[in-house]
Length: 348
Image (tube, rainbow, N blue to C red; front, side, top):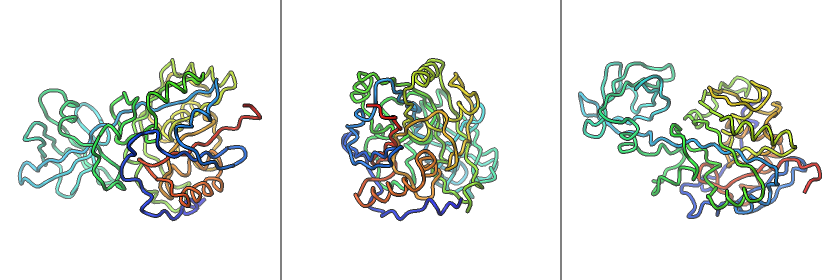
């Protein structure tokens, strides 16, 4: 299977640069998993596509304001640092620009010396290991000195940083938002609950590898980055009860889907679990945990398009994407939503 099989032409003007004024004003393309029928709706209609007894699964990760601008301690040269993953203690894996200026032993200061970092290692991909030094609470300093690490395709400044967080964001540690969840408000979640749909949370801290292009020619040759996940006992019990009673499990976002599939693959059940996942889902994969998926529109040739294609088929997904482009849906993080509606076997 070639990566180019998942390519499509996307006009640049369809890449959403800013969020809509109201989260639920997004459009919603519904693709039925059984009939492959496409329907144009509004996101505020999402509850009409959920049934009592279903379970909606949300990723409650919270984005760390992980982009830091500092100065080399010896020369004053400007250095941009992006925190990727905490390794141990105050040592972090990072991306640095310009990387060539940060050799092992070089130090960078941030916020007039409130925070300092020393390069202790260079990764094979050019990333830097940084050891941080500070007084006080690290995350409070990051909140004070850092800015949101918006994806590279977003060129405009974000006026309100809360719009790059879901309304239910709770577990700090993500390098990017689980963007399928950005459409929800508390009011619409309350309406969904009132309909008899269970809502459970899991955590998967999104890594910047999400935005890295697939460099391999063959899909099977691509290696996924590892991301940390966690599922509580309460969430696992609700998911298992839903499955046993015949309800549908709807993952909000590819991050939720990958976490659920990882746990079910490893344990053949929904159980309390945590760890690192590098699961790569592409056509040919058999879903065991997830019945339906709410997601945004993704980059051409991306692993995210491959995952969606695995759930409903490559040709239906490409047809839906061409429909979205023709009808000027908004793409990527601040764009519109797509719902892979599960098979209902004639149910209401």
